[in-house]
Amino acid sequence: MTIAAGQKLPDATFKTMTADGARDLTTADVFAGKTVILFGVPGAFTPTCNNNHLPGYLDNFDAITARGVDTIAVIATNDVHVMGAWARFTGGEGKLLYLADGSGDFARATGLDVDLSQNGMGLRNKRFSLIAVDGVVKAINVETKPGVNESGAATILEQL
Image (cartoon, rainbow, N blue to C red):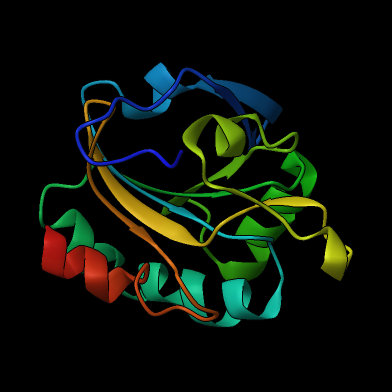
């Protein structure tokens, strides 16, 4: 079952790339005591994720953080090296927190996983966005059709 508003995010460990190399971050590290926007994508560098979903969050970074958001994070079931390269490629370093959920543990625990094996992609995140306050989901948007229709930055701005 997919996580819903009012539920606490599950304990998980993510990886993120830093100047000193890969670093583990827990759910508590990312969400405790903070207002966080988390958006999930099926894959770094994939066309819709790279060209349509992530850019909206970069373009609206100042507007989102001005509404009291401490962190904007993107998560994908890619490895930490791919996520680090994606951060550099998109110019999002220092703005967005790029979280690698390489084994899909968080995706499965939240019910936000999807099997894209038919497309040669294996287990991936559904395309989604959520607002979490101190680790509790306040709003969640899961795409019901291809593209960025419900989970983009414009929707998050309306919900803040």
